[in-house]
Image (cartoon, rainbow over all chains, first blue to last red; front, side, top):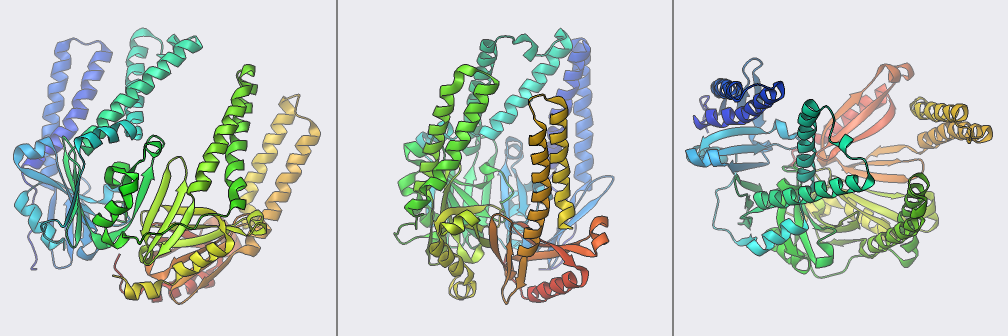
Length: 465
Length: 137
């Protein structure tokens, strides 16, 4: 391809940029007006000023942002006072994703995100508004294959969407929302009433009620958040590319070449596990730094179908039927003891510090710890099957990692002197996102065999894709 | 250098023990002395174990590391996965004429501490020489 002239984004980018900053600016100004005790008139005037200012900002930003392609790279230049030029070698582009928010839809454009390996979120190149044709041109130029008729397609049914939202609330989103609301509310009331929200809570009962309310509110919010991000979830693949589309307000479309998928994690959360449900998460360098939502391959799947669905969507991870190698029975106490002792100590500490009557709680916590340990023991294991390594562990959720061996970033075997005496060892693997899996307290011989097998990369590489 | 790095923890422990003895009546002097002794011992003992344990070896296709005082970890980093290598020196490491070598992969970095300068440069050059081969990330 010949060299390209510097281009600007579609004009809609002005609006997108402007709206982005306007919402913050206007909200901030209105808040200032309220706090200062101004009339609604001044508040409106300030809000208007905010809108005008952000329109200017949007225009200036749009003017200052250009991008162009040459033979080897995508160049992206942005910034008004300190222009910043990024050069992304074409070969390094991991994936090109699109997002279509309400604004983009209004103008018939898309937002394009070029994913670069290892980069933090802010380092990826984001073009806020380009036409569909331009997006297709860039995608082609950056070596992303044309969308073909999908060979496999898995869509999330509405029933499953609701179930996913109920059982797997987007807790992190909800927590931050609640914390934010609390900060705002506390601030406003503090300024007006002279005392914080917490000051009004004297009795333990009031505190408990407030905490319960906050939790319930958080749960509802997270439920809604899950609906918004996962609505219309479709995962499909053709011979080369895996595509994921999702979202209610902003439609996001992720595409990732199948050969760049490092692995998939089957996550059985605390609520989902007992119901026989799980979520599938994608492990790849491209989306490694994203939070959970961005890495979701499927928000909800029946546990017993999980491996089959993975095999359909990522054929390289297809497994022959077979079982994990589990830790030997003598490892059981190593799983059970630490959490139960931890529970007992925590309970005892609470009883000592807060309520002497809470002693039975220590026993209950210890029992809960023992159960957690037992669960972890039952699940733990490792399996090598062709190019696929399967590692299962239980933290809070049970996670089964299916990873492609030749794409592992590193692997390790570890043992403490106590484990050495018992002839046990841990095996851990690390994938491109920095995540990975660890199988604990395996039979030493099993661990060493797995470790040695993982080292035989050259062989696997020669036969593998 | 290892000693110096765990020395901070040691000092903190001693300080905590000291404050507790001074302020809390229930904290007996004997226990404080025990804590101090344990802190000093663990600082020296652990550092020496850690130092003696550390092994690294660059093989044909992989970097082989062995380290850890209590939990002994053996890690394999395939050379093809290495993105870049950096050498870090601080004022404090300069005192000992040592540097740290960081090996970065897509998943994060692995550090080999306490290398002598020429040793680190040599290892870095050898890793880089192996990296000349193209890879597909």
